[in-house]
Length: 79
Image (cartoon, rainbow, N blue to C red; front, side, top):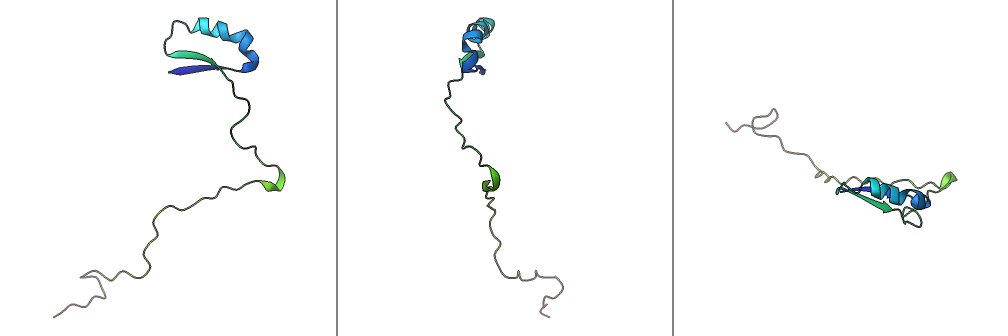
């Protein structure tokens, strides 16, 4: 589905024209933007800009050393 969004200020001029134009295409729906205001918070001005907090969501490594594998230099070989 594809939407053709008409701004409210141009509804009187464009809505019927665009609906007639796309009448033969069932994949297109012409709608009017009826939002009153932006849903996002207004950005702050000056030095009050918010900084995004980035979190590292990866698992932390277990602290400590990993013992050497059998056969690596530094391992004791029973003889």
